[in-house]
Image (cartoon, rainbow, N blue to C red):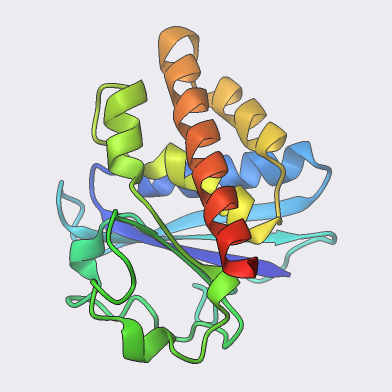
Length: 192
């Protein structure tokens, strides 16, 4: 089972992101489960959502305490919430920022992590460019597909089309595709 935890703030589409991850997994013939965990349900408040993906039925219902991957939609949470709690030693970390892990003050934390599983992408900038709104969730799904290889970009695109239509769908697809390509290029750079 592959478990993803997404940290963000209310209004950033955290819950929608996990739902779309599960739809993409279903489209690939897998089992998936997505659910949120709310503190105070208001715009700007910290929000956590979870997604499990497996090739067999998922019976677990509790929050994900030991994720295989973290997607952090708002880097201001990094030093306010323990986003990294329980992350598996070989886990993936994708952060919405144009800064490096060192610039974020995470150099010591990630020192023993595999470099090819650590990535940043400026998803908010991509969302503004392609959608006209600062909602980083969908570009991060494209980045997640690239860094993890758990889902195909085509499945993410199909999930976008199931959730959105017209210009909004096309903008989200463009943002997710660009994020995918940026992360792939960054990953190829870590192997060089």
